[in-house]
Image (tube, rainbow, N blue to C red; front, side, top):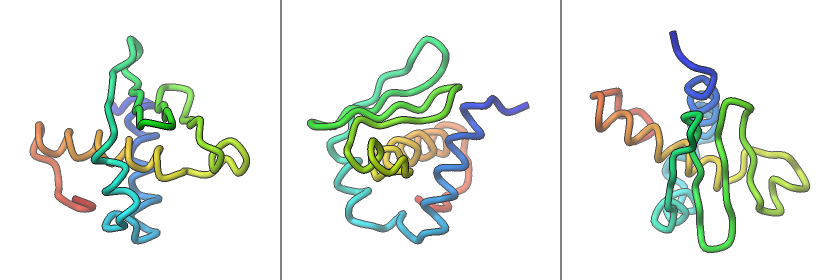
Length: 99
């Protein structure tokens, strides 16, 4: 059975895939500067030089203005979910959809 965190990450990845943004330069640029850490509950924190995104069992959040004012799945949340999904695919041989 998949955890809530897994479902949240897959939902974010699907959101970005449907918007056609996996090949978007903004995500790729954010991925280049993203540093990640795992939380004790299995959630992940992604740090860029200016913003911090978190995906955990309670959902997701980001310190950027886009998320703070519009509560959207901003590029930082998208980049963090994308990195996690790509790492899973690399480690467990998942599909390559969305890279």
